[in-house]
Image (cartoon, rainbow, N blue to C red):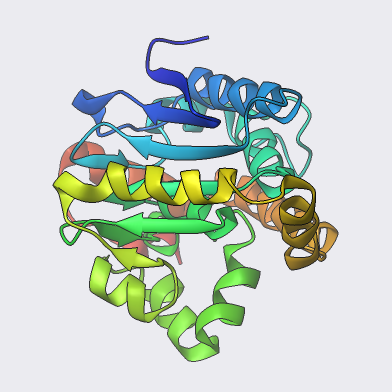
Length: 258
């Protein structure tokens, strides 16, 4: 367990808070392991009826911690030995409703994990970005499958191939968030939705969620396929140039990789 993930149970809701504000909640392997444990134990606990994923105020998640990720990658397409893929598999297969409360930056997996949540609420100042191509990488978390389904091929290409940031209003228009909520009301709003869900007949609720996610194996297969290609990219000259440019605080020059 890690002190950068805070887990609190309240009235049937398990609140899972990423709490590494000095790094904008960049995710380490230990943080993934802690979130996996929180959800898996919640799946076995009848008193836990739903989950809320959130970050320290002002940041949801800046994505993977660069040093952790470069050192460990995603272990191919298998969840075995990969906390990142294991976390994605855990939220993909969670039987109880997942609610995300987003305030601030949501970059990389900070955005892609939202595609596996049932409800997403964001503050007006939130910023989303899927910059994988800009880093010499490919999409993850089945975003190459889910995003075109949600927004169409052209808009998905714009989001994934250009990799530019977009705001909460755009995310709302794309159908990636349910509502935009002011910062001081965000957690109350998420908890209010959680209470409504907790009051429903739980058997019918979970069966309905299962029907909504009946293609879970198709999504899991895309996650694995993306992970295989992602790992190939981690060994590429393009990735090395992107990392070098980041460390040297200069624009990358990918022409030298051709």
